[in-house]
Amino acid sequence: MTLQRTLGTCYYPEHWPEKIWAEDAARMAVLGLTWVRIGEFAWSRLEPSPGDLQFDWLDRAIDVLHAAGLKVVLGTPTATPPRWMVARHPDMLAVDDQGRPRKFGSRRHYCFSHDGYREEGVRITGLLAERFGRKVDAWQTDNEYGCHDTVYSYSDAAQTAFREWLAQKYQSPDALNRAWGNVFWSMDYDSFDDIDLPNLSVAEPNPSHALDFRRFSSDQVARFNGAQVAAIRAHSDVPISHNYMGRIVEFDHFATGRQMEIATWDSYPLGFLEDRLESSPEHKRRYARQGDPDFQAFHHDLYRAVGQNGRWWVMEQQPGPVNWAPHNPAPLPGMVRFWTWEAFAHGAECIAYFRWRQAPFAQEQYHAGLLRPDNVEAEGFAEAAQVARELQDMPAVEHTQAPVALVFDYASAWGWSVQPQGAGCDYFRLVFEVYRGLRKLGLSVDILPPDAKTLNGYALVLAPGVLTLSDALKAALSETTAQVLLGPHTNAKTPALGIPVPLPPAISGLSAIVARVETLRNDMPIPAENGGSVKLWFEHLETTHDAVEKTEAGAPILVQSANLSYLAGWPDEMLLERVLTRASSAAGLSPEPLPQDIRIRDTGTTRFVFNHGPDAVAYNGQSIPPAGVTWD
Ligand code: GAL
Image (cartoon, rainbow, N blue to C red; front, top):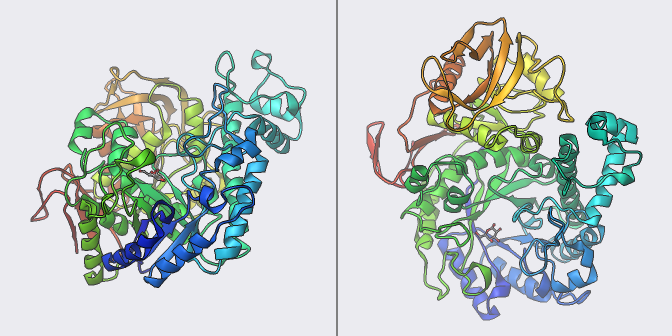
């Protein structure tokens, strides 16, 4: 598949006088942009009071952009319900886990379970689709589901909907009591109407109850999104997308992804490094102006899996300093170009910069745009222009399947967070560390959903921490001739989050059981015999296989049977490198430890090399400058 490569920006015509729209559009076109996303926060100007539709200005804005040769992504405005909406539906506000309403005055102030608000969303979406469905070139639903911690709501609407969801799922309170193990602490229910949301309990709620609430909440997001998608589809044939985020795991993105053609995400490398990663102060300092070397790539690969047929974009690309992280440094010169090329290397069709012009009012005043508030080009502008020029000269790139597959499962993230067993034991963190370990060996990775039906074409497959292997994945794993690396904590739980008996991991072909689990303080790692150690999480294995890796005391850490290996602990960097080198070499790959700051991405035709560091790095006979990208 040949990759499409276009650029775009996010534009808010409602923020600027109409007389400058045409000039803005002309400058976008000259810059070499193709796409403009508009409209996603404009509800108060599209419908200033209930039923008073003011769509003409948006129509004119779309005309102006089209006249300049630009294509338009129209956002549905449901992330910002206007004030009158809250007056109309006072109980639409989400409620936090302390029982407090999350009030009007910013954005995302709605509960996914509120039927009245979902219908309002469908209504405005349907009206927009009716008017613009044959005019715009793509759609975006809402904006960043889950941003500002908005998936979970403990409102009355959520409570009612949760009870209905449970009744559907379990059919009888008895079945629910059995599945949850409610005999423990006399928690049995006689009626679904007696079941509360799992907040404000004296001690921790039953983990099965908490997990079902997370599953329910994820379903509510998909239901909300699906309703908008249907309203758009009734009037429009162009692709529909949603802009996801970095490290948001509270809802199943594969479920919403199946509803739409394109997955997009919002990439803010410097903000993410500051506030979304477990890493040392030295690491944060080293990459403060470049972003973490693996965080963006991980999400590029994740959203390639979420989009249908691998279609994905970056809908918002950081263009300079942002406003929302604990510190907001400016990127190193060249990084805006670098991030754009990195996304293309991972298969993005479009990278859109957020935003066109910096807004000198309201919440994001210090957030850079491609233009400054005074209309002068900001630093990112020239870098975007450089990419636009480079795109013209660069030959087409063919996308191809990566040799390594890494399974990512949102339900496992919920299970781990409900029952972490030890501070710092987090599913995303585990999977991300494995991903980083693979990349540090120069390997390109595909991320797979947990119900992947085939593993054809992969040399190495990993599923760390997937709590319950789906039947489909189990079947695919037993058929594959790839090297398979499972653990820690893979297939360790029943779907209701109980411990299965026979004990895990219960993988056919592997004669090993996890007899007990312990979690470790940061200052009590368990040293491995050949260097490195197990941190955070250690499983005591009873096994008939010889251990390939052992603790200094001789306990198994890694066991292998034919092409199947099981890792019984959370490896530190050194142990992980050894485990991954072994597995990928056995898979016939050529793992090569890269210099600290270098990462590689292979497409079918091109090898991209990226220097994420603050200094030049010698690699493969050349010196790659900071923010440097090479391809051949
Ligand atoms: C995103 C959001 C944008 C803007 C941006 C600032 O999370 O979708 O609307 O707020 O962050 O970085």
